[in-house]
Length: 289
Image (cartoon, rainbow, N blue to C red; front, side, top):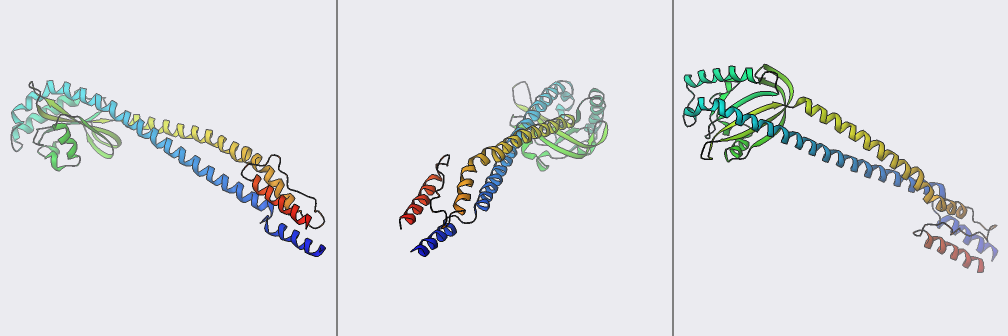
């Protein structure tokens, strides 16, 4: 009878608490630490992306408003020079001469400003003017962002932020610039769209400031979430599993010579308490046997 009881105790110690307590606690602790780290990194990534998207959208909106105001101001000054060509066909030598004069005027007016380039299109998409002479006569509808031109022709300004590794500006070739290009509809006296301006503005400095601000925000989030992670993993989690660790160690020590030992229930988590009570009940039944 005594040998049978001893074998039953060995069975409980071997099969109820598997593996040894410290290894079990380590796996729970490690799992919690990894999951917490993944969740925190995911939250940081989402917050960073949302902040970046909103900041870039605000930048584009501000640049668009400035480009629209500039285009409508310039249209009152220079568009009259191209009115006779708005419905014309191929670019003529006379139109090229007119464009050269406008480039000289705009080059002086936009000196030391963020305006890099200006174009004027007829409603059919013909490039009537560009500060880059090589663009004259091109059909905007066949070029990249043709949908933006169509949207502006329908009366709605369209803007896009893009990076240019090389760009032909009023001042010459520029490199590595962040540019907001805006298509601006120009109305006649009856409210009908008579042409489209395209204005390119340099927002490199503003974009760099946004990037630096985003980096600062991410570093701040990293600090805050890092402290939160340390609190959860090294504070809350350690304290939460301390009773379970103690119970596991005591269970591993149960044997034929310690028949009166029972696992502690005080401070035990509600999720684990039924298991502890079941083990204690099994030990009680073994004692009675």
